[in-house]
Image 1 (cartoon, rainbow, N blue to C red):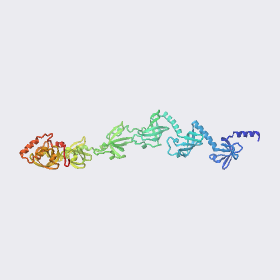
Image 2 (image 1 turned 90 degrees about the vertical axis):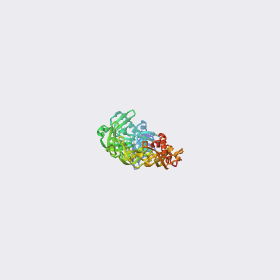
Image 3 (image 1 turned 45 degrees about the horizontal axis):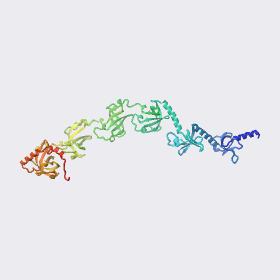
Length: 557
């Protein structure tokens, strides 16, 4: 070997430094190893597995990492894999410092995220995979994406990636371009990104637009999911753009003609219409007449006479319903409907069906302080006032004579068609016993009766024909009486003399102490009785009951 060749070899050897990447030539390919010459005095052996993905031949030039110039056996220690790793690592570090992007293939799922091959193994946290957290990480395995390098640890050779930042940056550019070019009235296509109770967020090439629930359809939409689904492509129109706040309002129904424009022509007042019940509320039922057009049947417009507490008692959602148009408010997009108008109003001919004086039968449906309501037919009641229950009894409350559910007879007294009221009377079924009272009772008659009621000023005695007479406290005994209940008890039978009959005032005066009087004594007592002051001492029978403040019954102390 000449001196020139020796010098060249020495210079070559000097350039070979351990842990550096050098070029070599493949000398031989064996089943287990590949022999590579790097221009040193001995070649290096590299496991075939390091060339697994490459098609190599003898004579090919390869870059390898010179780990050691000589091992214990005098062989050069080389690595193809480590050379590639070092090259890739240097590239990753440079990209990281430059703020660029790197491509990589997702290798697998690990705890908290994914592993990615970007020339070196890197980690992609689950929160950095996408803008929307993915449900299944396995769907990313095997795919190639661009990533931003967010962290590099040179000592541990750790790399952390983010795909989310890449997407957000792209969307920011798209959003800016969109805001610069879009204008109100533009029709655009987007994908449903998110659904809430009040509307839908639509992805418009990086820009999120809000499609409010009221702008989804001209008709009723209870929830946006009735119209769209996540990921669905939708055509919308731009309703408003706020470039400062980067907000866009969208509309879907605006792509269709407004069904309320010619509503008066489509549904004139008085027209009979057919629709479907869409919603039931306490005050009525909403009925869809056409797509985007609903009318309301108020609960009061369901029937002329039936007592309907809730629309749900007689209607169901989805039910086909006939109705009549009662009114239209185009500005507020409201239509009033009626169902009862399909049938005649039974009150229109009520006086023909129930003429004054007609006897009717019915069931007591309800009692109030002032009277009893009697059902004459379904939905039509007449009222018997307390004053029309009895000719002779002073009735303070109808429950004294009637109870709910009783079958009763009555006479039609009056009809008020305008206010839909019928007045009935029960006492009118019989003749007024006071009309011929002077023929039944005469002054001086000795009568028998039963004590019906005790008051502070006297006692009421029930006589024949359910007529009451009043025994004033002064007419109980020749002796002075402090309290009526000391002398008489309710239910006690007494004998008394008639000392007063007043047909006009509807009162009969009785005297217990005069039962055995002579005619002369009786005249004197009658005169004394007449002298009593009507306002307090002696009043008409009907008024007397009002002053019975000290009413007493047997068993009371």
